[in-house]
Image (cartoon, rainbow, N blue to C red; front, side, top):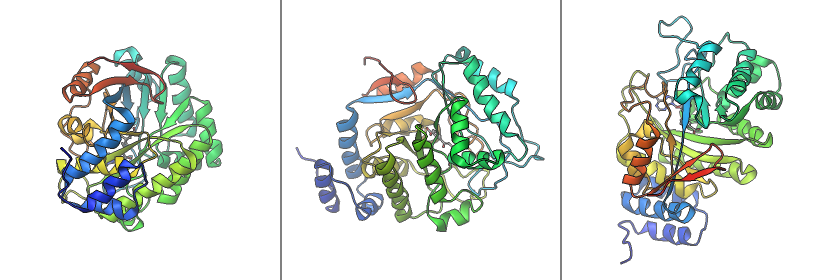
Length: 366
Ligand code: V47
């Protein structure tokens, strides 16, 4: 029996999806606003299964948040503090190397490193962090420093951005995570992160990263002050850059967590919005290979559902996650590999362990 859409506007979107045609800005707005969430999920699942079948990727990784000291004061952030705050911390390089070792003896395939914009750490700290990790764990891929951090590091180093990116790459940086994008719309950025890298600069850092031969991810923070049209604008701008460079691997919608932030009057995102965010992203970002359900932010149960709403990736073991936990996340910070494998199998999908660049796979039978 054919799927029956509750919202007839989804029929023309379904035809485009079936023919592999690109969806328009207006289609995107319909997808965010229609009450027919099941219809949106159904379409996203068709694309997900066309690209990946039942395969669901995860990675054996370890996140490290080296400092929470930050010169910016973003309204949505509960993690960043000033240097004189009693909760301020900055890990020494030795502590970072110990942290890297203390989960599975460092036998992971990726270190994922992001932190605040520290006012006093020298550029050499970042270079030594990369080369020190590479020396100790040569097989581990380092995915580190958001576009916002990269722009700040270039300023700190007094070098041009491309030179900074190449220097970091030559010290062991393998790829760039997707953070710092928030929402591109200037109206919202002025309210929630006025001091931060603007949208054009965020995109231009990623363009340069791709030109330097590295891959990167992209994110969108949703569930705060943004309108549906602004979410579509964000996705379309990412899609345009991907057309140009092909350097993005994965898109991760990030569910806003309001606790302990200056936006604490807002509610946490409903599960329906989390599922819709993944489904709309899958449909609009036709040139992104992967859509990730970050279980830390949306909970393991929603992440399992998400595997039928467009997502094909679950991130990984994680181990340390301070950014959303500072903002009230109730999830664990670590899932052993077996737990992730079980979660994927319980959802009726096939777990596939991957490396950062999706070049090396271990298919785990159901
Ligand atoms: O840049 C900050 C966001 C990001 C909050 O690339 C918040 O694979 C929700 O980017 N509520 C860091 N989100 C995390 C991130 C990420 C996570 C997992 C995988 C990847 C990847 C990237 O978290 C920040 C910011 O956009 N953030 N505060 C908050 N209260």
